[in-house]
Image (tube, rainbow, N blue to C red; front, side, top):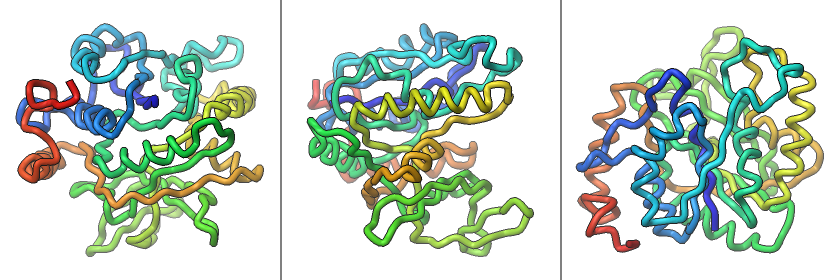
Length: 303
């Protein structure tokens, strides 16, 4: 079973990987905990979508430690993958998360999961991801989202972008809408709309944190949609071909996408103020025996 990890935005061509602050007792990062959890629930292969601009640094300092735990593969996402005649030559932003998934096509041969490298999803979410992927072996068109409750994905500091999900009466995914600047105001989750006015959100709303499950046929649909995206937006400096946007398009065409709720609590380093809270929570999980004090060493039973 393969897990595709979107990591191309972790660094840039000017050097220096982002989001690699140590939060564990031995300098473990958020990504370390995700790969550890994935391996513990049954994933045997991890494919990292990275940029060649930081390939050497990533392999040396990030992924090297996982090679004794899971099979590790690499694919690449670059702005230059779109012909010059179809894109703005001044563009430096990558093309988005759905394009990143497309880059993994040749490295995947069965149902696969997708996550962002910078999110801490927790063990329960990986268990749900793996279980639902197992159920889709040998099928086509069976896609799903592992979603969180909004109350479980708000950082202590500042506003964040959250993909608010709308569901059908049958519990299927109807749409994902990005709401920017989501934060608690007087205890209530709110965001600033396009008119710069605060709008209250439901604490129990389902939220996408980009943990998806797909069957391999998804690649043919992403490829067609990306070609259409580039034809319409290739000269745009900031147009973004995201997984939620792509999935919204599929759903509008009649695809049924399952919503799988996780009870887990997200963690992330949105700002420097979040680090102390994340460290406290990691230490509590270690105290409860969820994680060993040292992930990659003698305590790791996967080795």
